[in-house]
Length: 280
Length: 260
Image 1 (spheres, rainbow over the protein chains, first blue to last red):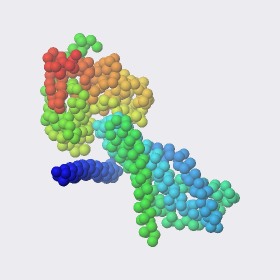
Image 2 (tube, rainbow over the protein chains, first blue to last red; image 1 turned 180 degrees about the horizontal axis):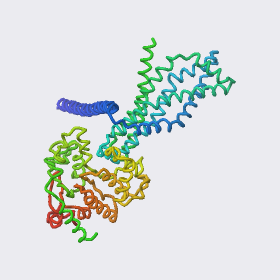
Image 3 (tube, rainbow over the protein chains, first blue to last red; image 1 turned 90 degrees about the vertical axis):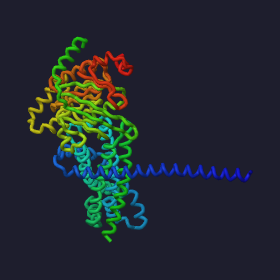
Image 4 (cartoon, rainbow over the protein chains, first blue to last red; image 1 turned 120 degrees about the vertical axis):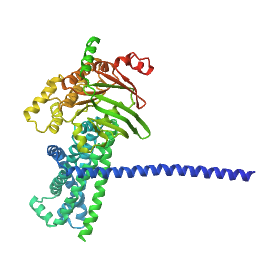
C-alpha cells in the first residue's frame, strides 16, 4: 500500500513538474517571438526611413530646423563635457606616466585617446541622453495626442516630415558635435597639463599632433556618423511606436536612451574590430 | 439655442440632401486581437447630409471613422468614398482621396510646437501648393474669422482653452475646403455652453462649405443641432437607423437610455 502511495506521489510530482516546464516553455517562446517581432519591426522601420529619404518632396525646411535643434542647441552641453573630458583624462593619466618617466608622451597619448575613442563615445552617449530622449518624448507625445494621425490625414507623410528629417539631422550633426567635443577636449587637456606645468599651447599642439596619424582620426570620424544614425533612428522608432496614454511617453523617452546608448557601445565595438582588422 | 431654432436648422439641412452617396460602407469588420470591435457595419452617407453616429463608449464609433480614412486598416468589407474603395487604394491614391476629407480629432490634435497660424498654414502649404503668400494669409484669416478666433493668430496651442483648441482644430480642417467632414466626439470634455457653440459651428461649417459629415458623439444636444439622420452602433453592428425624432420617440430601453 505504502509503495503504491509513493509511486502515485512520484507520478503527481512528475506531472506537476512537466506541466510547469511546459508553461514556462510557452511563456519563454512567446517572449522570444515578441523580441523577434520587435527586431523585425525595427528593421522595417529602418527600411521605410531609407525609402522615404530618397523619395521626392524632401522637407528641407524641417531638416534645417532639426539641424539647428540638434546641433546648435546641444553646444553648451557638449562644450562643458568636452572640456572636462580632456581635463580629467589628463589629470588622471599624468601620475601614471610620471612613474614611468614618460610624461612627455602625455599630450600625444591624450589626443589619440580623445580622437579615437573617448571623444566619439562619450559625446555619442551624451547625445543619446539629450537628443535620443528628446526625440522619443516629442514623437511619443505627438502620437498620444493624435498629432501624427492628424498629419497623416492631411496628406502629409509623417515618416518623411518627422522621422527622416530628424534621423538625417542627427546623422549629420552628431559627427560635427563630436569633432567640436574633440577640439575642446584637446584644449581641456592643455589646461590640465598647465595646472602643474607651463606649456605653451603651440608647443602642446605640435607635440601632441606629431604622434597623431590620419588613421587615428578617420575611422573614429566614420563611426561617428553611425552613432548619429543609431541615436536618430532609435529615438524616432521609440517615439513613433509609443503606445496610448501619457505613461508611454516617458517609457518611449527612457527606452530610447537605454537602447541608443547600448547600440552606440555595440557599434563602437564593431567599428573598433573592423578598424583593427583593416590596419593589421 | 431653442427647440424652434433647432428644428429650423434641421429642416434647412434636409432640403440639401440628395440621393447620391459620398460614403458607402458594406460589411465592415475590424478586430484588435481577439476583440471584435466592428462585426458587420453597413452605412451610407449622402451628399450634403449630417449623419450622427451614437453609441456607448467602446462600440467602435471612432474606429469606424478611422477606417474610412484608413488610419486603421479594415479586416473585411468595403468602404467606398466617392466610389473609390479605400481599402484597396495605394498610398498615392489614398493621399489624393484624403485631400477631400477633413477629420476633427477628439483631442483637437493641434501641433504643439507651432503657432495657430503655422498650424493652419501647415496643411494649406502642402495641399494647395500654388497659393501665393497673400492668398495663404487671406485664407487663414478667413477660416479664423469663421470660427470666431481671428485674434488667436499668433498664440501657441498651450495658450488656448479646450473650446478654443476645438475651434482652431476645426479651422485647420476646413482651411483646405474638404468635401466630407468626420468629427470624432467634437464636444467631449467641454462645458455645456462651449459644447453648444461648437455644435452650432459644425452646423455653420456644413452650410457654408457644403460638406457632408459624419459626427461621432454621445452628446444628444450636439445630435439635436446637427443630425439629419442618426445611426446607433451596438456590439459592432448598426443597432438602429433613422431620424432623430424616431430615436426620441423610441421605446427601446437602450435608445431611451441615451435620451433621458
